[in-house]
Every structure is written in C-alpha cells, then in structure tokens.
Amino acid sequence: PPMSSHLPLALVPLTPAAQAAQAAAGAPITLLATPRVQLGRSAHDVGASLVFHRDALTVSAVHCVFELRADGGFTVTDRSSNGTWVNDDRVPRAEAEPRGVPVKEGDIVALAAPPGRPVSTPIEFAVRRATEAEVAAVAAADAPRARAPSKRASSDDAAARLRKDVDELTL
Image 1 (cartoon, rainbow, N blue to C red):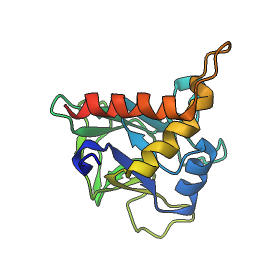
Image 2 (cartoon, helix red, strand yellow):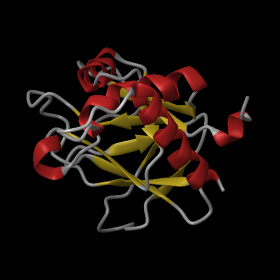
Image 3 (spheres, helix red, strand yellow):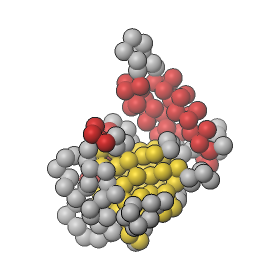
Image 4 (spheres, rainbow, N blue to C red):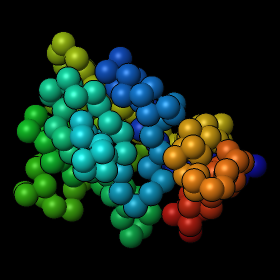
C-alpha cells in the first residue's frame, strides 16, 4: 500500500453545515488533490469545488481558495465578506495577502466565524490525510461527471486517474 504521505490532504467536515455541503457534493470529503480548490455558494457560476446551499448567507459566492504551493503544501486565501480562519487565526483577505496562509495536516479551517465560537451555524473542517477508501469514494462520486457523453468511464478508471493526479502532486 502507498505511504500515507502520498495520499492527498483533505477537508473533513466537522459541523452539520459542513457535513451538509459535503453530502450535497456526493463524496465524504473534499480532496486537496488539484492545484486549486474553491469553497463557496455559487459553484456553477464560479467553479467552486465545494458548494454550500444558496441559503447559507454567511458563506460568500467564493468564500476561500486553497492553492497548491511549489513545495507541495497548500495555502488558503480568504475571498469572503465574513472571514476564514485557520485554527484561531483569521486569514487576511486576498487583497492584503494574495499568497494566502499555509494550511497543514491537523489544522481546523472555519468559515464565517472562528473555530469553536458559539454561532448558530458553525462551518468547520479538519485538514488531514485522506485514506485510500476516501480517495476511491471521491473518485467514484466524480466518475459520472467525468464521463464523456459517448463513452462510460468506470469508477475504477476515475480512481486510477485521481490516484495518478495525486501521485503527480506529491512528487
């Protein structure tokens, strides 16, 4: 089996609002396995990777963006009205810090309020390594979207493509 360091980082929902957005995506977690992952309310308009219901008014259309760094790590940039936090630190808005701040395994990312703050709808994610099973589940959920109209791709093919993408990111 591959070493866990070869598996991508993932955003794992910790709160009901985060779990609802993740469930709507059809996968158990959001993999940080592409150079850019966006979280927000307007997926189809702006290409967000994890979409929140349009009634989630504390979440901006493009709330935050995770981007791959040259060293293989990720940063998060806040593009919201209500803020993004990594642990207890507010991420500066993109205008103030366009390169974002580093995100690493073990961090808690919160949207619209700091982690653990008593708000009506907290939105929090843990950052950790994905498991093989989670990578396969995400690949299976993505398979219907990845199919060409005239050709059916199997979930095994989608999982193989995703593993290849992950391997390229970790080289």
